[in-house]
Length: 414
Ligand SMILES: *Cc1c(COP(=O)(O)O)cnc(C)c1O
Image (cartoon, rainbow, N blue to C red; front, side, top):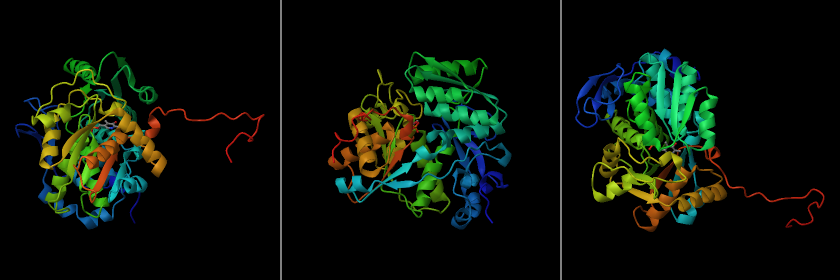
């Protein structure tokens, strides 16, 4: 009998071997507290994939509960007791059938990450980073956030009994700021953007105040986020889709999925086909798109960044070159969309198919529509959009009507 919590409690070996600098290839031992490599670049976790292939077979996976911890052999946590879980269930693929029909598109699926704890896919990254921090004995953590990441860190940190400090831009959506505080974290509103907050978090880390858990400045959030790609391939019967539209901020998810697909192939679980990876940004903050167009590897800071899609308002991403490499290697592209198109897409998916996207998710649908119009993708493609947070966390327009109980229903349309 498989129990619901088998993946959380079973003694299963991780095949982690070491950490590797994503730029220079320099290696570092696993199981030590680390931020960036000595050269100042993100670290990637490496595994003995030939060894893992023996344990992580299709049959073994089939027998396990369907959650993020199903993939323990290729996740970094060594001891089950280190896991700090809030129930990271597999997220569903939801077809947007009516939207697809209007567009004449063969298949349009939303991977709905809004179902995860704290309502966003930031839970995938932070459950892994906090579990590893727990394993390595870290007790105080700080992070800059546009909202969702801070909420996820605050929730998992509370569960692990850690002290959490969050710095966010002062115009971060109110619901996020309050959610962070609700978990007992200290949250500061900063008069600046996320990279300004990041500088302060880095300063505090150098002073020894806390561990810096900024995007890609510790090795484990990518490992959590890569499970999106693992899950997706398994859900599609060990196939990858033709195209993935991903709302790109710091890019952890895009980088993570790309890494995950390579690991699945090395494990013999998928073939050599890869999806075309599309980095979607908002026109008001599109450093990756601009750099992709220019054929460069590193994106300069985007000045005066603005967009309603707070999750992708990232003016400077330390992993820009990793995002751009994945986009290019996959023969994908990068596309910026105006906020109006993203919000119109949110309305269309909600009204045609009953799927409430977050504005970042709306941006992926808007980008898909634009890509079809420009012939960048084919109508025969199987397309997956990432809806990275529940639409319920965002302000919604008041479209209600008024009804006077004294006048009754007389004035209503039949
Ligand atoms: C963080 C976030 C993103 C961007 O994700 P990255 O992997 O950091 O690029 C997109 N959408 C939402 C809702 C987010 O919270």
